[in-house]
Amino acid sequence: MAPVRRHPFWPRLRTAFPWLVLAGILVSLLVNTARPLTNTDTYFHLRFGHEFLQGWSLRHPGSVSTFATADWVPTQWLSEVVMAKTEDWFGLAGVAWLSGLLEVLLFLGVYAAARVRAEPLVAMPVTAVALFGMQTGLSMRPQVFSYLCAAAVVAAWLRTLDDHRARWWLVPLVWLWAMLHGMWPVALLVGAVATVGLALDRAPRTVVIRSAVVTAACAAAAAVTPVGPALYGAVAAVGSRRGYFSEWLPPDWISWSSAGFAVLLAATLVGLWRRRENPWTETLLIALAGVFAAYADRTVALAAAMLAPLAAGPVQSLVRRTAARPDPVRRGERRAVLAGSALTLVALALAVPHTSDDPVALPRWADPAIRGLAPGTKVLDDWDFGGYLMWRYPRLDLLMHGYGDTFTAAELDRNTGLLNLSPGWTDDLHETGIRVAVLRPNTRMAYALVAEEGWSVVHRSDDLEMLRAPRDWRSPAAPVAPSGSG
Image (tube, rainbow, N blue to C red; front, side, top):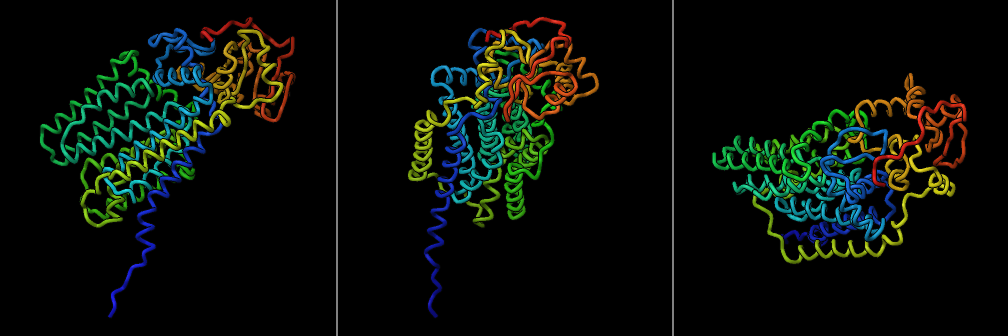
């Protein structure tokens, strides 16, 4: 009886599949970043970066609006300064390229973290699904730094689980992270959970002690940035403001990004069940990623970044029954990944001058009309569009924008009450002294101002309109210039 021959197509597909996924990842990153900067939060980060470059103190920063008076602490000032400098040197096209650089670095970091524990056939798809789970957070915002750092920190503790060596480089990493974005406490939680896991896994006592010391040193490092220990207070203040912003609400589990995380988590759990014996450290870190995914819509992307290195090992067990470590990275693999990433960045550099150099498009009337307002004019604006307006028209005094740290709780209540037309909203609006509004058409506020308060439509288009209060509408205060250097 002749032996059964396997068709050569399947081994070839198995070999080629990771590199097909690689091509798909890089093309998607290129498409995602070779386009206009439409996320309006990008623009308030640019504005704040310019304010820091022009003299704001890191310990006592100012405000770009007289309607935001909180004593706040900057948690992502270094990212904002880099963004603003990039805009100074290369314009918005340079900022778009910087966004692409961050996303390519994120891909490389996540893939490297997964590749340690799985072969390319597993590590590349795991990376792709994790990036898909991060899609809502992939824009030119400092949070992308947090995704990269979170994956690196989890991977570091998994390596400590393997070889019982402390990763002291985590201390300077957290110090840097604490200047880039406010999610740096994730490193402390991961370190604490990993230390408990190592103790449950019966690691030598010296390993457990060193792990606890590394985590404590990371906590101390965050307190010696230029902002100082006040950074801890800023972290605590985030929880008090989460109810005002939709991204801090519970996640929508029928969204595509949440589905990406759910698929990766399901594959991880099946792999854990298949392996039967799983270390406590890995299991507890997977549970921590699940907690972050359930905490808020904003932290689903963070959880996906954390889960990628954790998923690689269990998913590897679904592909290969043996528990052997994957083959080391070969020269051809390294060249393919790095060359593909470099070519993506070159292509992006060629594309962004044509695709990303212009800001968000406004109606033809908008720029001359808004720019023609007197410096210090108080303006009622949409919450989500305020970031863009404060960047493009720095001399205006905007009622609201998305940088919630600069507002007191009472000011956030006022803004929320206005947008929801809560009882007393007209009194609150009278007290602001605002007589000009730049709003999205067909919103409740725009309708109420015209239909109930007698405001007139000065300019209107499908996506923006300017309103003015009637002459007899109460205005208790004259315009006051905002305190930002603008």
